Each structure stands twice: as C-alpha cells, then as structure tokens.
Length: 198
Image (cartoon, rainbow, N blue to C red; front, side, top):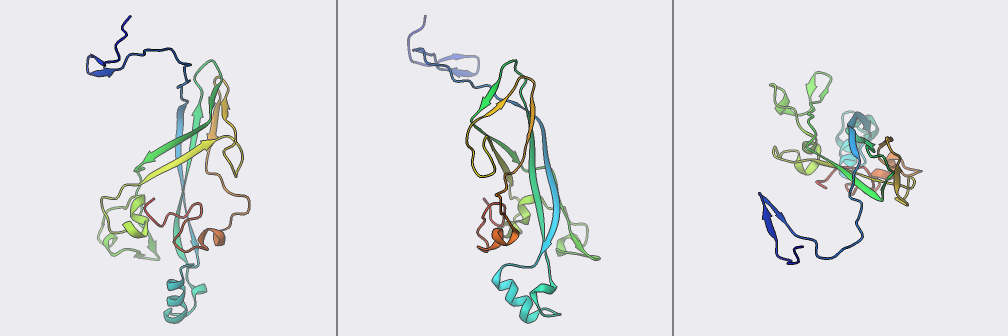
C-alpha cells in the first residue's frame, strides 16, 4: 500500500492517493436526456422613464400607450434521467447552456429593426439583445437553470429520481408575478429581466 501524500503520474493524469478512509459522497449525476429552449416574442409598453417621456412628448402620435417594445423571451427546459438501478438524490443542481446555437433578426412591417440587417447582415445571438452588449459581436451568453426540490418559492429538500425515472424542470415563477412587478425597478432585474450582462 502506498502511503505517501506526494502525487504520482499515470499517463497524462495527475493522481492524488487516498491516505485515510472517509465516508464516500455519492457523485453520480443524472443524464440530461433533453435540453430545450423555448422562445417567444411579447410586446409591452415601455417602462423606462426616459423612453416613456420621449414617447409622451415626441412620439407621432404622442403617448407611450401608442407604442410597444418587443421582448425576446427564452425559457430553458431540461429533462433529467436516472439511469441507475437505485434512487438518485440531488440536493441542488445546475444545468448551464453556453451560447445556444440560435440567432434572430426582427422586422416591423417591412423594415428591419437594426440597419445592419437591411443588406443581409448576420443573425444576432442572445447576448446581442442585451442593452450593454448590443454592439459587441463577441459577446457570450450563458443560461443557467438551478434545479432543486421544494416549491415555487424555495429550494427546500432534495430531488429524488427513482431508477429509470425522467423528470422535466423549467423556471420557477413566484406566485403573484406580473410584468409590472418585473419592470418596476427599471433596468434592475427582479427575476427574469435580462437587460444586463449577468
């Protein structure tokens, strides 16, 4: 039995030997059997005070209620599968999707909403639809879905996946959520607003 704490090499892997016995932590993970991102477009009146003031004073016709701002909504939906013959208990997990392979261009009637699209300009990835990154062609976008037991308001308790069980997870939405509640703080996100780079 090797008792030294010094690492030794096996091929190209660096291994650290186990000196003392500890209770083994279950490191098994479920299989991500499906990863989807649901996209939709919604429109709301502007909630940013500077834009509201502009539409009210300089809009033609005047008034914020005559205008709508398009919002691209995306929701990750993940299906986890337990391939093991024993129960798999997860206290909390995260699934992260980086740079989803999707791009968008938008038109209002026959006019593109960005001049760069008029002559066949490229589609823009999700990161380019954030205010601080709209001109950044190298922006990266990561979507992280936190998964845990409990209900809509807390991650209380584990998720127990029975042998062979598949379960689908999506975003948690607080009970009395509204668009007005989401946008009440301007550019500061409450739950879903993705104005910034976080």
